[in-house]
Image (cartoon, rainbow, N blue to C red; front, side):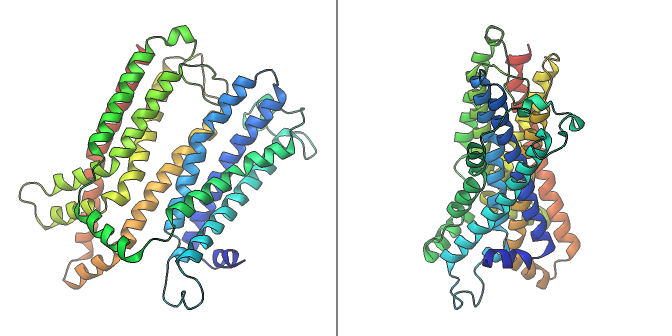
Length: 390
């Protein structure tokens, strides 16, 4: 009840972020329900239905990451003056954020269930799947869907998001956390060499497995009409993506060091120091965004080389959910970083720094990140597609 009251009285921007999480949960829930409908309509194609279900792990993970990013920036989850006296300590605030995340995702999956039943025509009247370009056969229209199994599968969305939020926001020892935060601000991230090594290993695995793609009869099994492909190719993609995520903080820190190289002026020095201090906060979301962008670029090139295997409508839904979630998570991390620097920004303003200088420093940080991360993302995507399209 307290979570509902806090949600009702929140700032409109906070409400918008929560509605975005609900929309992501709705998209993920619809994909999960589509696998149940496909299994009900095609009982003999159990392997195909399992592949569709496994591909739902990507939007599920992206939704959970977005939910955690939103919970981190939620004002209701922060320990403020007077909350401890009211009985809202760190543990209860974590439980409150977990309950809020679960309720938001529950709203999304319930909307997905209504949309799924409406498109199938189970709520009376003709189904609307055809009007949206979705083959009703993909949803198992005309075949009974086990409601218990569908609800159990839908429960994984709010449950996964709630568990991820609870783990990310769990109470920590205040003194130890402060000492660790000081070390993190001063020490560079250590994951850059490991991330590069994993990305290179993934590309090598994919190059080795890509030579036998014609024998297996497929490239990349996405939910829709695309089934059957070498598992080693997908394993190579996964290794490369994980390498980019692991290298993300180190790459952001590297951007900051490049800005501070030589004899920097005040603008470059300010921008570089901020990137170095915020590399741990910004690195992982940006690494995930680079990994997803690289995979999306590579997938488009692969399917351009195979025009007879078009994207299905459910593939578009899954891709939209993943891209929207990782982009929103990166923007939310940037907002969290800005909030964490509020005291530093206020001190700079008192020392005479103008608003235009702070804006130019922010723009310089963005340009530096694009200059370093965009070519790397494009290079990984190009190298990943070489053994598949030639």
